[in-house]
Length: 233
Image (cartoon, rainbow, N blue to C red; front, side):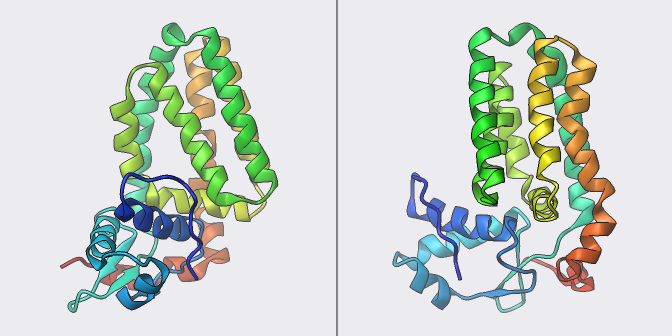
């Protein structure tokens, strides 16, 4: 069953894509699940072209894969893709930790605290979709502060695999870790301490990677050997 979103999107294709994407990231759809155009056509009464475009974009992002007959399936988690993403993110956030010290203004702290409080509310209510959205909004604002919006967009386009790890952290009742990290990030920025900023920016990422074995035990169907069979035609 598709868990639809209520956000405003520029196009129908965007709505279809983000709804499917959120279901995958929040683990509502398990890897190997077959998404049919008939099923999606019932959920989204729109032009089939919009649905197919959404599916193709999700293939490009690694959340779907296809077989030789162009049937669409939910992808398995790719640990190598996650490691590559994390290495890239660390590089950017190392630089962000330095640049934000001179760029941040008083009003930015107000905005960051407001976003963080909203995210914590959604974590407390077990609304993983909204919690992840506000987590992204928090980090996006950090990049806006230093005028590097394009850096965030690059990260966001490649984060979908890792976002499933964050959902696993939340499901395993580790929400305290996520809430505390964001408060600590704000505190470190106010202290103008780049090493502390970087450490707090990356601490829940490190924790997620360290728990990969636990995730594989708790969610074995998400790490199937069939992952090696994924391909796009």
